[in-house]
Length: 291
Image (spheres, rainbow, N blue to C red):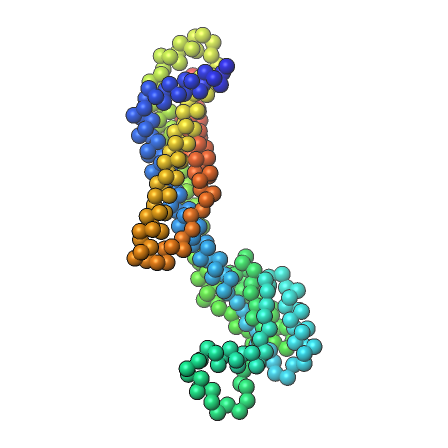
């Protein structure tokens, strides 16, 4: 009975004060749209960062005249490392063939060579979590100490760029989420406070009839959650329209925009986030009111 009354009361209030609630829903939707677009941008940046991580590698050049057993021993030692995702052994002959293929039309540069000047090497891929400047440098230093390794090369600047990109995006997302979420909570807080004062006489009457504080507060929590929910739904619609505009319109001018991915998790997370923030704002509002 209590929940039935609370939902009916909240629904009546939302319909009666439709313009205030509509304005609040649109404000919440605009705020959640900004959060969605930020998440959309960061999601695609993370995809790019992961693709860069997959391309990042450490190359160890082997000393000359190593036996097959010694070479295999070096490979086995590297495989046992916890930061290595995979490796590939490249013999001197394979390295020369790859160089010839790369040079193609300028292959005449290699004419006149009487012997292969290249060294055998091992190309290693680090696990994604280890593609940082510190971890890559540490791994390269440890691998260089292995007997039979002549020199180790790794893209230090690439590791720096990937790490900086990830950290910057994470920090920016946290700042934007906290800022916008605070705004959504404030909107819900202000709306519920206005609705409370507009129903003050009604509340005084049901208090005299013995209504508990929880009974009085419940409709306002439902209203705050409802405002957040519909704000989230409108935010999703706006985000999808934005995504379609980019992928189908702007992609005609900038083809690479077709590769952008819309995270489907947002379709569930946004309304849930809206409900949570709406309820939080309502709790703060009614918690500061004297009942």
